[in-house]
Length: 274
Image (tube, rainbow, N blue to C red; front, side, top):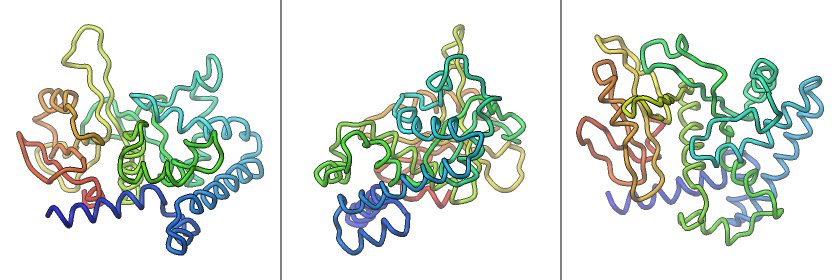
């Protein structure tokens, strides 16, 4: 298990950094040079910007503003997209079409807040509260580290071995969203704030609906963890409050597979099997 896991995690990190765009993959296979791959990815990001200018028409400015803001929003602890960063007193009704344009163009994946982790997530969907993930995590890395031009090979090597002092949780959560979406899941999360009850305050990264009908609601809460040490405060609160109606709770991390206290811990690269 140890040797296989290390090898699989190594390939997984390569995929996270390179991404899945055919030109980027081809360049990596040809050169094994992350810096040359980054040049290709930046060309793709430039094509995205050109397409926005060409085809977004009356929504161009709003689509551009959202697109440029994605990395900054994902670096925040709660990762929810704040419209106030785009414009004072901005309203979702004014930006809804721009979000749809980016989602429809397969540039980003929208993840909406569901007000309760119960059957019919869409029925409880709160479209004004959302998280925006890039559809390709390799492109997110080039998009996020844009201030100094081409990302240097040294920076990519640090990313490869998990030694870069950045919010790696942003990248890991993005690639989980990417894998869940590619597996056919619609993306939902659960976030509850409460001034009066600490038990009610929780943030669950993802909710997925499991196939089949039972006496439960078949909604599995998922927490994504990137570090060696972490807590599961929100997940345990969620189980305590909604346990009677939940399906299996999952933690996705880079450590061993196990089951403990009713929670299944899976390796990150096993996400597509959920």
